Picture 1 (cartoon, rainbow, N blue to C red):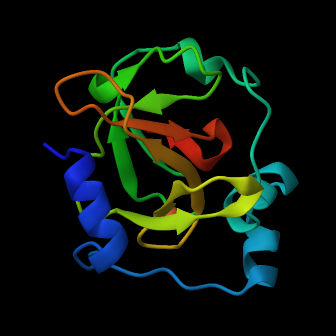
Picture 2: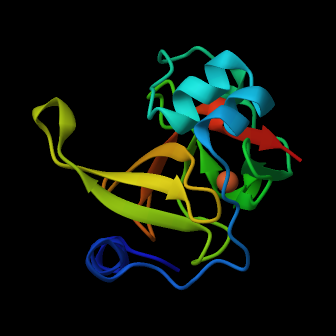
Length: 146
Ligand code: FE
């Protein structure tokens, strides 16, 4: 189980290499994705809070990267954060999500991206539920339910 200590380590040292790397040009992603998914995942956009009913759905299943299909989160790790964005307390695997310090908007936050295709997913915070204490706050547009 990952905790905030692991996240701090990952920001400094990176995560283990992904099983595969998906590299496309911005133009190729634009062709492939809808405009709103392109804006969130390739231009680090943020969707409006409570814009998706994915926030309040907890059926079993796996959530994958909207760009490359890498499996990212299991529904069993999803919880109701009341933040307006789908929230998870653990990733499926250690090497599928990358962590970067994000100092935009006058804050220091930890940005999370898909480690396979570099899609912007959202941020991770240390105020999640026990035992891990992690809250992955993820744009619903950067996920697709498998
Ligand atoms: Fe991806």
